[in-house]
Length: 270
Length: 230
Image (tube, rainbow over all chains, first blue to last red):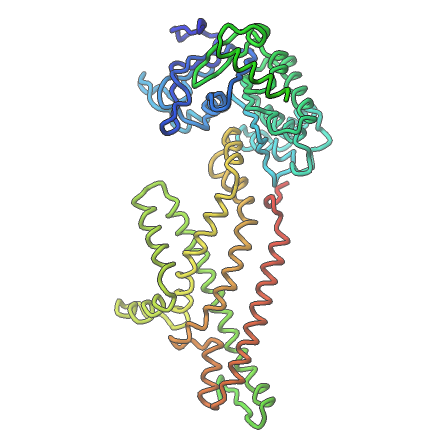
């Protein structure tokens, strides 16, 4: 069931590679020797019950959580380690800063900075991290606000926008850093049902028009089906099953996956 | 006669009118002691908060112990200690400064707590988002954390300023000529305590009402979502 794992380290196609990654919170093992790969340009959805470790995968990639053991490569470089005299040692802050530039993250709770205008939310990091001029950063902010359909809201504060609009700003903010990999951590879970569509539309357009690698943790099965090249079903810290969406979501091989999807359809119908 | 101003005991009204300028001198000293004590509390509290939140246990533990000790011992004990013990070690401060220092030390334990609570009130997600954007920790603190913490910190600090004002009379025991002490001296010399002490109560009421109103005004003016950054 886990047939794409390989021992070779020079697979140029894998932009993300987890090897036997273990993550514990106290006595709970969240990731249990996880092997997992994402290829360049691939759109991968992660589904699974809460507590299955799916968000943890994204948080580890974004360096918001450390790993306990194992090895992760992003864009061919170790994420939580670095080479010093040909020795693999735990990564220092400078290395992590470099690695973070590969990725952008969209959070469930948006996490926009409430005291900054929409524009400042987007320009802050390009100016102070990438070293863009104020003018360049403003142009870039405008470009991505246009992409998410909010070019006219640049001077507002996040609190003046709807949840769906805030999440679209958050997407623009992440994109403005020009990441190669976008991580979406349940981007529509905190939204009122009528606002989910506008956010999904933006993500869909992104997936169609950009060759970004996308990793999406979601409960929106229909959406996962539409945009993903592959869906991974997570349970108890490892991947139970992964396959193209039409296969996994309609005719899963594993009993555990079937159970989850059945339970999911029932709770969503009620 | 006090501060070169003499009183008129011919009638109660004349007496009250004549000692008002003297009491106002005392009030000025009270306000000065409050402000100096408050400034010391602000600075010392910040240092204490930083030490308490240190990741090094050898730093954070003594700081916590110290804060607990300061908070759990009476202001008067600390004041006596500073006033009578420090000179034995060659540190002789004027009574006014000693008093302000005692107030500052006492209240630093409280302001440290205000700083900590204010900083912790900034949602975890804010720091994570900034981290994901690769912003440097110092910048995250300055443009993300501080602007959101300040509106929560300032009103709480203001309340302690009002508290300090009401603790200033304790300084009279080390002969600081603050308002209560002035009133007591007038009473000692005229055998009329009722009028000066009543006036002290009234002046205190005015002082704290004004100060509290100031704090409330500040609170309404501070944006709840953080200081706006364009």
